[in-house]
Length: 395
Image 1: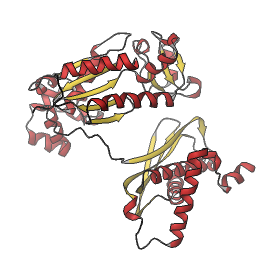
Image 2: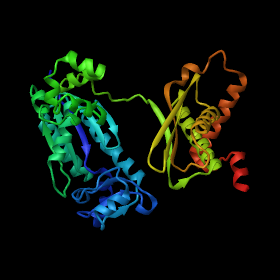
Image 3: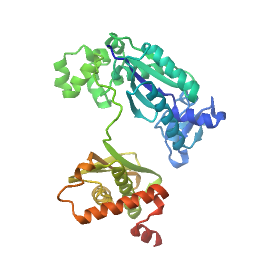
Image 4: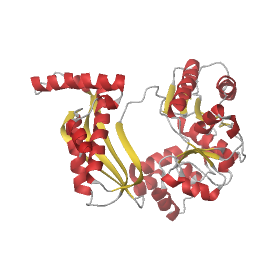
């Protein structure tokens, strides 16, 4: 049976939710995010704002320059999460094969469901609009790669101050022909550097990639060259995976004003390490790799990591390694715009619980940490404070 894969994407999701709570925003140019005078960034923007060049991830100051009348709305994350949960539940009632990509985006495998791809997509779009009053766009194809690209093209084709509510269909057998005229940047795995290298070879469209000899693409780009060549033919055999394995956990903060206070920066790293470790314990995971992320005032971003000999979920060890990385790569007095801690190289903590090297003291420490986690979960992070933090604030 030929697969039918949908790429589902809510149109300007944050903005659509904000319009539901404040109808005065409908048809207005507005953005969700931080204020321009606080160096905020556009998290999402309405379609009237997009018509004048505003887009996500743009500094709010620049957005205000493009659209002086732009209205800025703060983020209401709890509302977005609740609507996302309801949307994903609705999709899950249609098919168990839903792969959530983000808060507002998912792949669906609807193979074998009554109706063709277009009729199923239109039914989903209507239900989401009728029951939740949210606009969405859908790409329909025989695989994930083409469905995602089709949705991007369908949405981009609509130049209007209204949500696109696009449905783009790529018939089975026409995948390569559909992709052929598109610019190479539409293809997964083609970033700015790869695109520049392809242009040097006079390869400008996805069809140009498809027409290359496979071995030539491998010669120039290695394994990525082979993947690009296959994708350019419209080939993608990956299944829709309902449950994605957690690959990393991180916490970061962007400051309203550059921060160069060493003590404060290290306290933040310790707090972020605590939050990351608590999430590890909650997920019953351990990590072996710890990394920090630093962004300077000129937006240059640095990421550095270290790998442990043994997996851990110990916040003290995570904080110690994060601060060591910070000490190595931060120059005294250098202003920091963003700072963060992350962990990766995760595995199931359950398999480490009974390791012979685990001491009685380690077991007691884990029980204490579990109690503290429970208190914070029930009464908030501020319910338990470390003595070092209280001492610092008292000075």
